[in-house]
Image 1 (tube, rainbow, N blue to C red):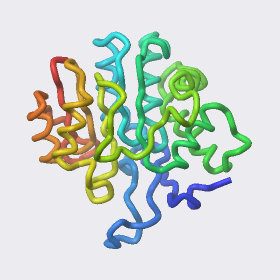
Image 2: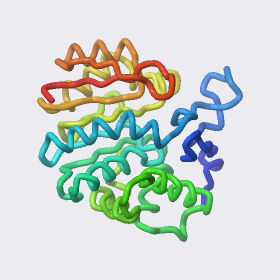
Image 3: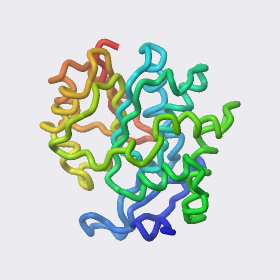
Length: 251
């Protein structure tokens, strides 16, 4: 059984008591630790603000929406999609598609094993982390945490349902109403933030009525959004962070 350290991560408990992961090694050696997946002020709170609100907007306005998630990580965004749908009284069948990309094989494997209760084959530290994520997502709601897992099991029946790294020549399997862009920074994942690549994703992957939401506020992203017919809305960043970005296209 692999622990987080075995796959190059360490756990960081953030300000709202929800867990995040941090790379053990810095990409450029400029710091003694690598990039973290979330703001230290609150992994769950940040996800709900940046991704939960736009996901809810799409669920309200689009019948059987398709979601594209760039950066599975610990599965926060996928769980938040399930949370927002269940809070509206929707079922897994009311969501047409969730396509998630994650470059780290173990993160794909761990998440699916956890969803399907394969607890005997997961390291206790890993199990505890996912359970903490789920509890954080359900906090302040009347939802049964197991209902969120059941919802996602319908979309991620096995490991093949989660895609690997989002390559520069990717051929998307669908067009999407909601693109939730949560990739590591341009320092760690440079090609995912290049303007040409962003144009390709938006041109080939965005439905006529769609939105993109991300924690980032980069010039390349804003230019690509405008080039592909999106209105760019600068939202408040999480806990003093610089602005986050919302792109709206006829929605």
